[in-house]
Amino acid sequence: MKLRLTRLFIFFALAAAVLFASVALSGCTRLYYMPGVSNGYYIWKDSSAKIHVAWTMERKAGEFSGYVSTDGKITDYQQINFAKDDKATLNVEKNRVDFSAPLTEQDLAKEMVLSVSDYSYLEFELKVNNGYELERTHVGEYLANPKDAVFRIGKDYFENLKKVPFYKKHPFSGLFYKLSRDMLFTLSFVFILGIILIEIIRITAIRKKILADGNKRYNYYLFLCYGILIIIDAGIYLFLTRLSFI
Image (cartoon, rainbow, N blue to C red; front, top):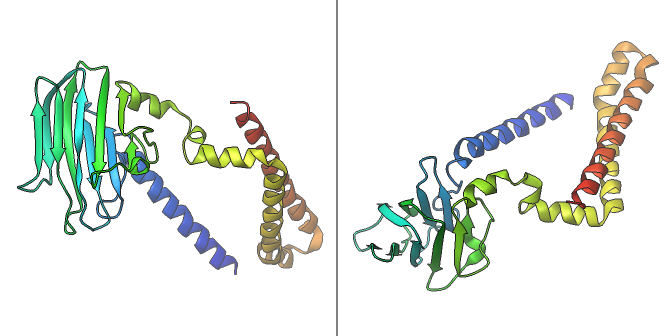
């Protein structure tokens, strides 16, 4: 039983490490999404300050169109995975790129890369099937959605987004807010879950240790486990209490 739990822990630890590494390596310069699996628009700025606008859909046909404009200058733009009939046109006078590049069932994703200089804002209108799906438009990070169909972001938007603590970002902010609203339930749930885990440990790892060392250290191990649980519960209480004042 102990061997199975150890293997399970190692598996989840490795999976978490791989996920963290993929986000850490790509998230700083690229908004993570899965072409052909994710759905919607993904916007980010890379390490060379180029603006990326990518769109993908779950392996079905869809119309994607809109524009990107600025009060600065769009000096260059690239089209990635565009088909022959897809369009992306730069209006130099308006500093605006209009595009229409639908996805077929065979397409995974398409993308535009814009070089923009001397600007204070970027303006976007991004349509899906001639309508708007704002909850599937991710600006700078997953689930950072605009509130309006035509929206603007400032030049420092992406840099400021990185400075926001993780617990203030969606969905963590909503989750922690709900947990802090019902503190008693949250702490009780964590404590009961901890008791269940301690009991599992008691009848597996501690029991095996007792058979080897005798009963002298039984209470020591048990008190240690419950002490750690109380510290964890107290830490959660302090964290949620502090969060409610931020």
